[in-house]
Image (cartoon, rainbow, N blue to C red):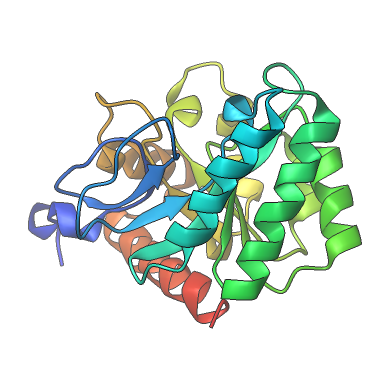
Length: 227
């Protein structure tokens, strides 16, 4: 297989906020965006969407519970923790625990938003001891953080932040286990996931063809581990 033979179907987009021709898992947040019929999706209450109105939060979480049981729902989230924006960390943690429970009960991977809170996410993992894989989306960690997750059931998804010239992860990406790499476009509607693959290929000297094969394996293993 040559690069000319690679089609959009060869490039998996693990997390996007807009529908596309790619293999894309759409990020659905009740109360924020809509969900089209027959769409493969994840569902969760984003930490930015958590309000001080607990009744409203639990109404949204009720829909998360309901939608999570849909056969087209492949993952739970995005949930997570953000030290710079959103509700108090205590409240964010409370709802992340709710998402962990849904993930474990339904045996579906958990996709996580993380802004300067990896220490707290790893603390929750130690406390909850989940069996399901976790995915750190749009990851921008350094070598120390990569070492902290390297022996855990945690995948790393690279996206818009990785594409910036000054991203930390660009410097250290070769330290991430290839068996734990995934790619995404997040909410950047101008980004093609193939470009993210290409940058990773250029930095690591792994051919685009071999990278597609590896990510396909990672994608398959992600869901086999959840079954």
